[in-house]
Image (cartoon, rainbow, N blue to C red; front, side, top):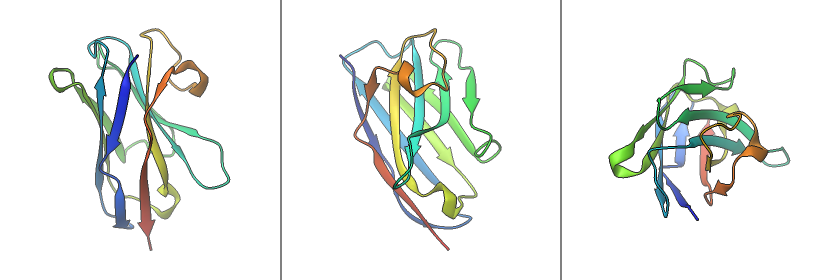
Length: 124
């Protein structure tokens, strides 16, 4: 079973940038789908971005298009989320998730493995 560990969260001012990382172990990283989700207090976990590991095709929520970029380094078994022009509404715990190659990338229930999450807080 895949293990996922996120890192890179923290406190940043609005307009700033952060890069999250998610390191995977226990499975082949070159296939499948990896996703980023976030959960703010009192809200459901929401889709942020996803990438097909073999093709590199990416998917984004409308709220982050043009500001966030997800990428992967298959040799390092690592997924990244570059977040630019951060807004207070981006404050949440961010999770990475792993799934099969053919899943619907925006569907939270399609993913089988989850990391523990990393907190991102955007201040005014």
